[in-house]
Image 1 (tube, rainbow, N blue to C red):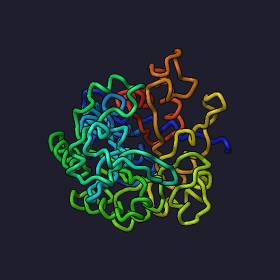
Image 2 (cartoon, rainbow, N blue to C red; image 1 turned 135 degrees about the vertical axis):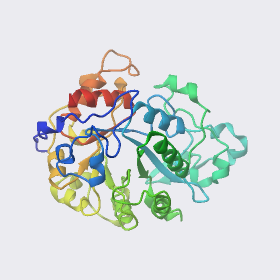
Image 3 (cartoon, rainbow, N blue to C red; image 1 turned 180 degrees about the horizontal axis):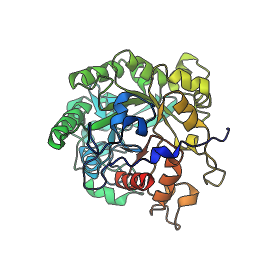
Length: 384
C-alpha cells in the first residue's frame, strides 16, 4: 500500500482530559478545546465532545478484570476511560448480553454446571466450527446462574483472582449502570456497542439490530448526539442500524484479505483491502461515521513483526469525514509489535507507551486498549 502522510501537528492541542483518578472530560467541560481544533470536522458532531486521542476501554479494563463484566466496566470508568466497549450477543429468549463471543466456554464457568452438560454442542459460526456452550441455547435466567471468568488466564493470571465475582451482564443492565454513573459524575458515560455475528443470528431468528435499537430508544441513546457508538465487522449491520437509529456508527475492519461474513453470504466480492481504498471508504461514509481498523491497517508490520511505514488510511478516511478507532493495544509483550517488546517473557509488559506513541502519531482519532490507564497517560504525553 502507498505510504502516507500523518495528520497535522494541530491535533496535539492540549484538551484538558483527565488521567488516573480524575474525571474524564464530559459534555460542555470547561477545559475542552474547541471542536474545530480537535476534530477538523471529522465524524459526528457528538464525537467532538470527546478528547483526542480518545481512549476506548476494550471490553472494559480487560487487562485487569475479566472482560465484559460490570467490574471491568467500572474499573475502566474509574480510571478515566473516555468510552467503554460492549460486545453484544443474544440469549435464547432474545435478551442482549455482553460477551465477546456467543461461545461462552472460555469466559464463564458453564463447564462446571452439570445441569448444562447436554448443552455442549458443535456449531458453525461464520464458517468456523466451534465446540462448546453458546448463549443462544440459554435463557437469560439460565445464563444468570453462571459466573464470568478470565478468558486468557495463562497471560493474565492476576485476573483469575476475580473469577466468579460477576455474572454475565445484559446490555440493559449496562445502560442502567451508565445512567447511574452519569448522574453521579454529572456527565454522560460513553459506550461503544458491537453487534457480533449479526448475519448468523438473523439466520436463526435472533436478529440483533432491532433489539439493540429498541434498547437505545428506551434509554435515549438513539440520537445523533447520543454518547454512544455502534460498531460491527459486518457493514450491512451498520447500514441496517442507520435505518433504525441516528446513533453514530463505525465499521470494523480486519486483515486486508478478509471478506466480511455478510459479504460472503450475499456474494459481494469485496475484501477489506477494497474497503480501505478511497472508493470503499466513500461507500462506508454513506451510512457510517467512522471505521475501526486493525492497527496493522494503519501501520503494517514486516515479516519480523516490526512496524514499517504508515499507510494512507488515516488521510484517506479523514478526507471522507470518517473518524478512526484502531484496535487493540495491550501492555503484554505477546501483543506488542516486535519493536516494543522487552525481555523474553511473552506475558511481561513491554514498551506499551512507545507503541501508543507510534500509532497516535499517525493522526488516529482514538484507540482501543485493554489497559485504559496506560492509554490515558500515553494520550496525555502525546498531547503534551
